[in-house]
Image 1 (cartoon, rainbow, N blue to C red):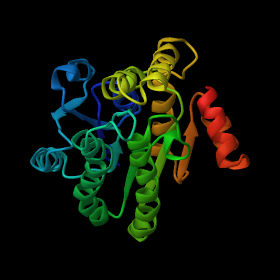
Image 2: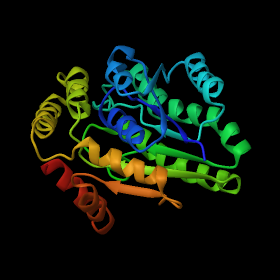
Image 3: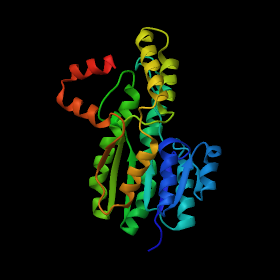
Image 4: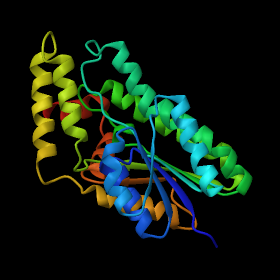
Length: 271
């Protein structure tokens, strides 16, 4: 049987980068796509095919998928890893930035899914692996827009799973907890930019500093662990519908289930 073809979005760093490497090591034909093409050189050196992709630009997304189909004739697995965290008080975050957060984390993922589905249906096989977050199950301070996108990805994926099952297509959610990437640093900077002045400044600055300390420390999970989980979901005969993995992911979800909303809020504020 010929090697399966995988497209990994957001492959320039973090989970997407490590996933592209591991899938290549496991015998897949891997396309790593990202907006920052200069950061894809290391993947190219490892034998991974790279493409420019901006998930806020429809032409870019269509061109990316068309190029893979032209080269390989198929796409077997899509790993939707492109995304970022926009933090800030809901009152403070400009609607332009809120829309961009949704555009990248939800609509980009959805459009990439639309584009690959016809090919997966035709071959009666496919896997859509969506990188969600523990943030799609719980909430944190000043993460309203980010959590809204991840809750949306959860619901979107559940509905999609039912729709495409008859065509031999699996939909998998990977829900990372705290991962050792630049994600938290970027989120903290966004929070400071949005809410370091005004009514929410005191608590916003505390949260931003806390995020920086956590993501600069050594407690978080290596993104290679998530890449291994994604590879497992791509290779097993029948993948789970969800993989909750990474620092504090399972404990915090359990707390959310057993505590009242107000009690959980107190824990989040204390942390």
